[in-house]
Length: 200
Image (cartoon, rainbow, N blue to C red; front, side, top):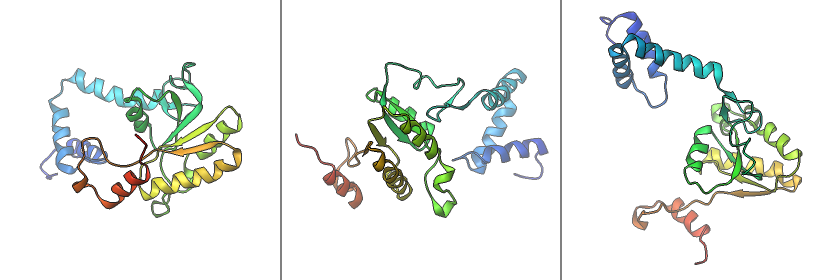
């Protein structure tokens, strides 16, 4: 930002620019938008940021974000607690819940194994997953990590830990998107679509 801008505005822009997917131009627009807010709107915005840090923590069971001791999904007796879907982040739960099809529970890893980025298995919530399984009553673990090198490596690592425990480990199927065209699909997507084909 230009030196002609007030220092508090520059500092606010720099904070917005730290958010994922926000470049300096977008950060500057957001900072100027905050300046257009009324005092009460600005206070409500700041209070929401402070409140989320004070009130939201990890669910003691699944590691999802919650403002309770146990999140609503873990506390729901209508869910199938014998099936655990393992995801990378809390936003993945939101995506799966939108389908209205999955009736099991979740476990959030809060990242993926990535030696290049300095993320080891100890940095993830894998121990908490193993502790849940050791209590018994878990019949299946669904590995729902992204189909990336890190996602696959994490899924394989966890599945090797779980095999001796006698728990069925499955992986989400990957392939062609609905409405997609074969000519535009890359080789890996086509390979996965062939590999995960179903009888009709």
